[in-house]
Length: 261
Image 1: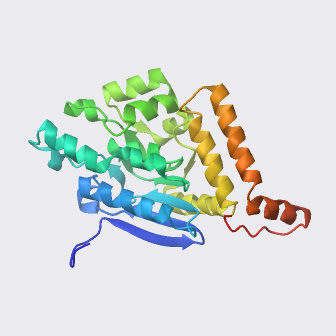
Image 2: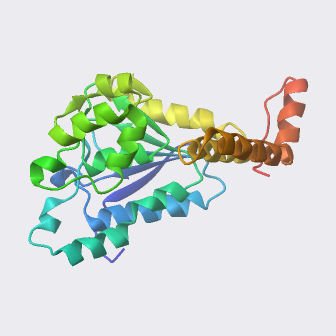
Image 3: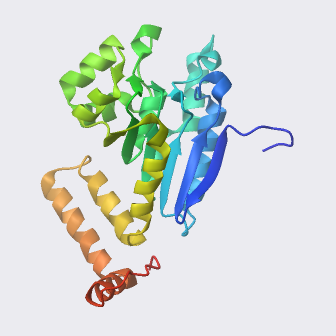
């Protein structure tokens, strides 16, 4: 970051093994311009390489998780301009993150903001949060995985209704559909996400990564192949020092000291 430049992505360390990554662009309602998304992804990728980081929480501000893409960037941009911008962002980078990702959503979570939340592993939402895919009202469609992830999360009919109409839906609906893991009071959304992240961070880190990998595989393949993949990851977990420590700690009635090995 150049001297005098203000970052739109902030990093905090609220608990051992937990890092909070905050989108901080309130003057633009946390709209996701290319620079902010690139910084966000680069930050998450860097933290993913740090063995001391065992869970990541992604959040925005109290009023906006993220208000979609920054439309000012699109303006009169050509198809080639948009294509090149999309190539620099490459949303699929988040699929390569091994560390568990929790989205702590408050306020409005729109368009690309919804896509960011869905790209995380768990979504914790404030009761007042509002979600929407308004792209068809703007003459475009979701372009960061919205049509695919939403359909897998809530089914074809609900996904069609929400995406084709662009209508907002409340956090209670999102929880009912399975898009959101839990609802919490607005003032507690970050603290509850951090608490959950702490629970995850206390587990064996290699086992957590292997489990995340196996769950994600369920969306990519058949049950038969997925079960075989799970079995391979299970056998890998048996070979870790953490497995030996976990079993020993259980038998000795003490807290385990996992090393990620």
